Image (cartoon, rainbow, N blue to C red; front, side, top):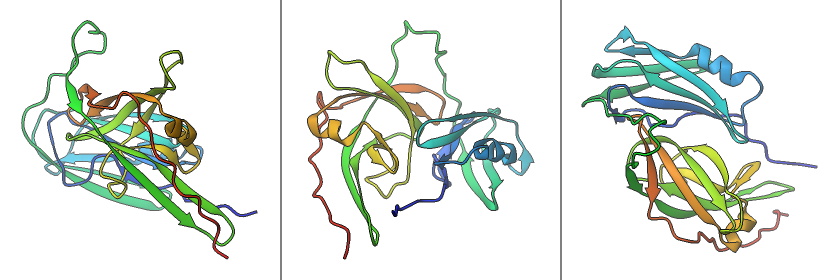
Length: 236
């Protein structure tokens, strides 16, 4: 038996060289991390602002596809922010420009206050990975928004008679339909399952912005449906 296996990869949810507000919320994510790697990554993270160490708050979490390290910069100062990490022999540094004023972040307990909104866009995506003995086809949507964010909380259901299923998903690389959240088939996990997307589902989302606010994503179709990709045979 053969299967295409991608090694765990480390990525910044907010691309380096982005301008972010003071008290920024950022994230480092790992695809399919091995046991303990998220904690090892978190312990290695260092931050400086204009060359001087700056306090950060780190939160570790994971879902079926990703490991997350959320980073909140505990400073309202502006300047040049640098984040670095080293894990399993892999090291990287990302630079950000901190400018503007910190945003007012509504406490989660203020459920009675209306949330800000942002318009989302669904871009169909598809990818075929060929191997000598197996076929891999990835298909789904990329959900994008016009504001910098670290993650989205995605909920879907078959129809109004079904229960909502939810998962927190990071913003991923820009080469699959733009910087956004990949929905559908993602290596070992399908969320929502491609068969359900082919039948049609109701979709809801909110986005966690870089300034710390959580906003509701609007502009989504009442029913989200994708055309099935052509089936590919393994190369001979």
